Length: 192
Ligand SMILES: [Zn+2]
Image (cartoon, rainbow, N blue to C red):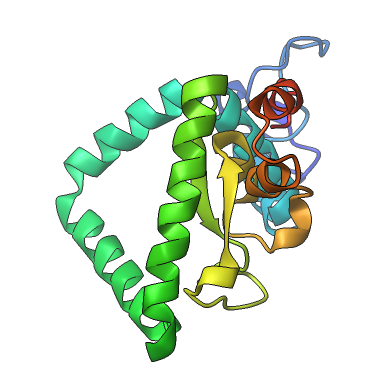
C-alpha cells in the first residue's frame, strides 16, 4: 500500500504509475489523480499542446499519414460527413461573384506549387489565409484569401489565424520573379 499525496488515501501499488527516479519507483500521486491533473493541464494549455502535436506531426509526416489513412479507412461514414461539412462551408463562404476568381487563383497557385516541387522538391499546399472555420474568425473562399504554404507550414498553421505564418512561398516566388534557387535556400530552414 502507498499513500497518495493527491487524494490523501492509501492505495495498492498497482494504482500508481512507475517513476524512473523516485525512491520507491512510483509516482507520488495515484493513477486517477494523475489523469485528473493531466486533463486539467490539457484544458488550460490547449494551444501549447496543439503546438507540440503539430510539430510532431510535421516531423513524422509519413507515420502520421499512415495512421490517419488507417483511421479514415475504418471510418468511411465519418469521412463522408467531414467532406459534406467542408463542401457546405465552402459554398456558404463563396460569394456569387467570386467563383471565377477562386478558380483562377487556384490555377495560379497550383502552377507555382508544381514548379516549386519539381525544382526544389518541396511540397506546397493551397491554404485559406483566414481559415473557413477558424478559432477567432471565419474566412471566405475567395481568391484574396488564398495562399501557398509549404506542407510543414500548413501543418503548423492548421486552422489558426494567419499571424502564425510569416512570409509565404507564393509571395517569395512573386517577389523574386520566380527564382527557385532563392526559394530552395529558404526552404532548407527547418521551419519551412
Ligand atoms: Zn490519488
